[in-house]
Amino acid sequence: MENVKNWFSNPELIMTFVIKYGGQLLFAIITLIIGLWIISLLMKGMKKMFIARDVEPGLQSFLLSVSRIALKIMLFISVISMLGIRMTSFIAVLGAAGLAIGMALSGSLQNFAGGVMILIFKPFKVGDYITAQGESGTVKEIQIFHTILNSPDKKTIILPNGALSTGSLTNYSTEPRRRVDFTFSIGYGDDIDKAKEVIMGIINRDERILKEPEPFIGVINLGNSSVDLVVRVWANATDYWGIFFDMQETVKKEFDKQGISIPFPQQDVHLYQTRQ
Image (tube, rainbow, N blue to C red; front, side, top):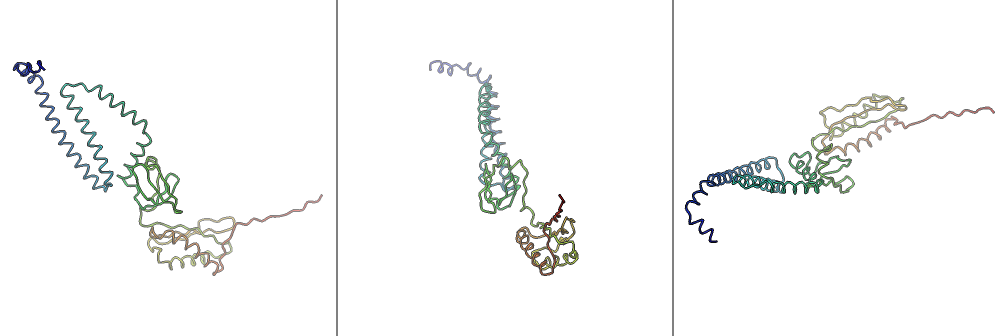
């Protein structure tokens, strides 16, 4: 305590300290003020970007908080270094701790990063019907670590976001229209033109089927016991399954009425009697 009083009572020591460290201290303070101002601008820019991309509010708050803390830590280390304080040991300990935490939570961090990518770039949204990782269903909820699907038979499917964000994915709800494909088989003795006419009549009576692009009917295969006709029509995505099931039933009934056969696989067996 006495040494401190002597130090403050000695103008030469005070002047020496100011001359030696005053410039560094002033520069550090200016750097701190400007750094905090730049961080504030960056946070406002990130927030505007998140709002423009319609990022969920919860994810916005989390990412902004993490970014703000990380930038302030970096600024703090820079300012302390300007004052001549060695931060090498502190940075080494911080890096080792970060590496250990990262290795322990590698799977969770991968899923977290995948969740962030999904919420930002939006390859799908809640309500879309998707196929990914060998599973299919309607997206019920997008969480930060997992995505929850509802299968058509009402099973809950939980997919990790890490694999979901990096693997192949089919989104059936992206486009407002979808093509519905059918294959109908007729016998070799049946009239192809008549079968086409019957199918086209069914298509024209169904108001859910779009006129543009035009429906297509053609012979796709000459099978062992049948002539296969491919039928392609376009419809609104919401009408896909209704048209798919109704068309199958209606074509079968109309073929029966018009005497057009739908052959099934047959095999001729020839028996030969050998003489002993």
